[in-house]
Length: 385
Ligand SMILES: *[C@@H]1O[C@H](CO)[C@@H](O)[C@H](O)[C@H]1NC(C)=O
Ligand SMILES: *[C@@H]1O[C@H](CO)[C@@H](O)[C@H](O)[C@H]1NC(C)=O
Picture 1 (cartoon, rainbow, N blue to C red):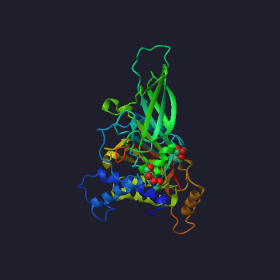
Picture 2 (cartoon, rainbow, N blue to C red):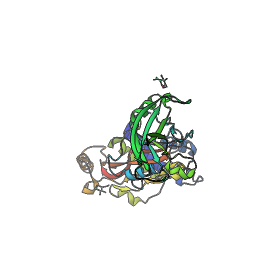
Picture 3 (cartoon, rainbow, N blue to C red):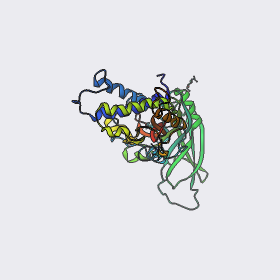
Picture 4 (cartoon, rainbow, N blue to C red):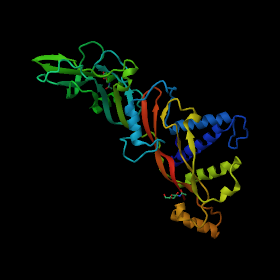
């Protein structure tokens, strides 16, 4: 779009506010102060811009509550984000996007195929994990002289269709016959190749062998397959940790953000909302709730249902107290303004001076569950700049 990062940020926050304001109004309330065209046009443009901010190319269908997200993705979201989606601490997540793909091919118990076409161009693969749930072997006569282990091998299939298939070993391990639980295989190299050339993706094959009395037994052990909703929570998953460079990283530039703040502080006056008294309050942070239900996105965003972006409001008049977090530059500007030492010098601007990232867990347009981290979405502090 060619927009500078800071402008993007200000547009985003502005749109969030404008949008929630628009949406909170009944359609009958005419006289929208910012609208040159009809209200619908403004709303459509705002929604389009919001989709760009959240990097949503195709609007996903309403998947909830028909489908449940994989528990692994829900746990991952809760690990990196609080209930409002705000990042708990930096560095918890590898990369800024985690995509999960469910196995949807039911040829037999041992073939697994994942349609990874939702991955975007320019997305850099960091790590790929193949997660399968190993089922317990139904207890046969459990004699202590029998070996309790079997060898499990994961192969990349090099061709589709007819058996026997050409395959390449990725990983091998010994597992107990009588325990159950998740097994995680690192498949980064293989999946990186698939990302580069989608026609080389023929899926995985898992084989198990059990040696007993010099006889080799195959496929004694089974892995959960999503047949029926009972096993749904144990369905095999391919999880990709990636870095998307597409998202504009909005390093914070106060000058354009201050334009945004001026705009913000003018807007409620235009709408004749607050009293005149608020115009002289010192720079402070206010709530700005972005409700995904109001935007119509609640059918596919799993968590959170909305978040508080906050905004900054108030004036930066001399003397600037410590709580106003003024830069030295702002302090000097407020003095020049107060003493009228120079023409046309306004007061410094009250803008966000610390922002946190937001995490979203959602179904994409192909119904895969994605966890994405968005930089600089929540104002945690305001200051005079
Ligand atoms: C992509 O993979 C297919 C199937 O493995 C192969 O025949 C083809 O040569 C590959 N294309 C490229 C550009 O590597
Ligand atoms: C300035 O920073 C302090 C400490 O982080 C914070 O408590 C205060 O609310 C900030 N001031 C504004 C105007 O946000």
